[in-house]
Image (cartoon, rainbow, N blue to C red; front, side, top):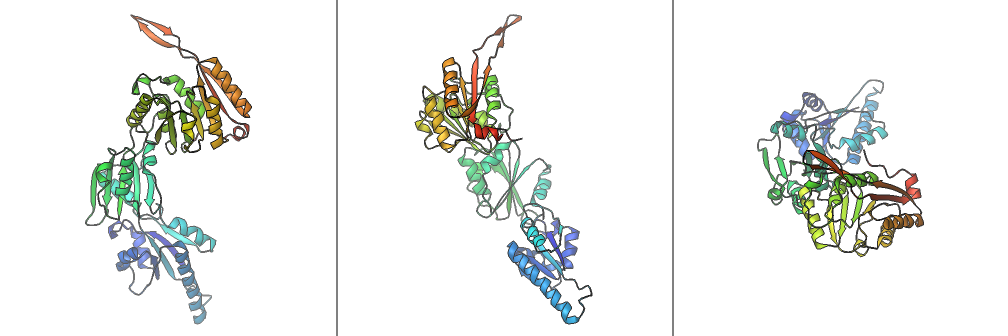
Length: 429
């Protein structure tokens, strides 16, 4: 028995390779979804056996039944020593290597001792790329076809995102989620029934497409969210400012370095001020979430404004005083405390109660806060690292430059010894 798994392209026979056509034309048993069997039936011999199955276990069962039948025929004819081979072809839509069912079937075949060949097809991503006349090698490829998908996190990585849609998550549903997160102006392109005579490609915004009907056979390309990918230490002038204090660029970069935030982390920023640290934390944890806690109404407004400006839609603003405002927040992986108003010990305890292995970073200007932080961390069995950042900046006076001294900032980072010993603080590559 010879088993071949084939990618049949986008649907129109014109997107099928000649190699796949020959495999289907020479098969004795054709297995696949009903839609695919109907699409390729003109290529196969009318007398072949067709099996409509989509689940890997059922496909394996059909192949094994075919193998048993092959053995039975050989026994009846008394030709067991002769080569009697039945060709089995399993058809998949698109390309056999792009979010294809071959990924689930191949391990089952290998476990059953059944060898299989795999032939590629032309995928919807290739067709859309050719229609738009732009290369696709830098696109981020995501499947929302029959699986849960968070489009907001996906567009936060600074790359165009190609969504293979289907099931409950079509283009409209994906766009609705983007619009609900504040990304209504994000540009998207939807390709419907690619390669078919009624193919349609439409460009617009997430807000425009959130309530539109699209064909079930659709794909979507979304541009990256604004400022989704920036190096640490954004210039101070880029932030919307008010009368609330803001952590300056160089100190902010040092804090980000010590916190070593990973893409999927949940992060608390306590005493978030204008949100400059929150924004950069959200850029690092672009598949996680950042919770900015601020008690001043003006500060909360500034954080919201900077959230919108930088497109960090995984940043959540929490108005209130810590530690009370922390009660309903998700367990943190990282915590930054830029202001505690005398409740530093309670804030640390609230964070450790949620996650005993959380990394906690505290910034301070006065020596008393530094001393309190070291004591609190030591009493809780945390390894503590202390650095002092003192930044002098130049000021031009006529045709000369004078260095202006800044206040020294103390940055204390700590976590439980057991967690620190595992090296879990390293950021993702």
